[in-house]
Length: 150
Image 1 (cartoon, one colour):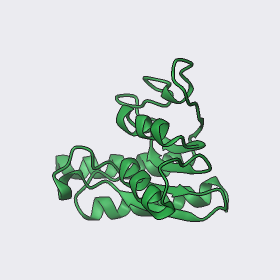
Image 2: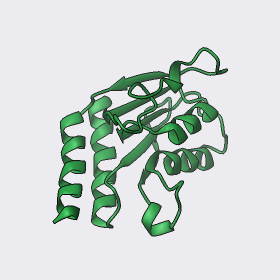
Image 3: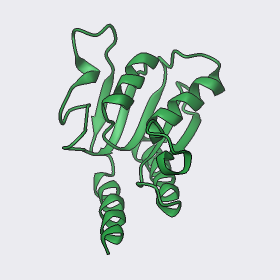
């Protein structure tokens, strides 16, 4: 599978979030063998938890599944550019890479507002690829918020 194939799985998780009234953001974690070890969607509303972001939940699940907190061989796929909290969790988990769909000009921490993945002051850096199925990821968000406003 390639980045677009994995992003499609994250988009499926994002659609699940929308179905449950959550902002449609999905994330998956793939280990070094190419196996999907965690899938999550936003659960802030359902869990009444401000940390219920898809990326954070997927990272937690991956760590539990792999029985280790260092995810140094893993890639996180997220439909929206991660916020500072989620990018910080990726840093703490020592992920190898993050791939995201559409940028987040209001809260993005992997290129839009901040570059947490490549900050020389931090003790870990990770690769980032952006724009993978960006139009589809953006359309999910735009449709969700348009329907909310009506």
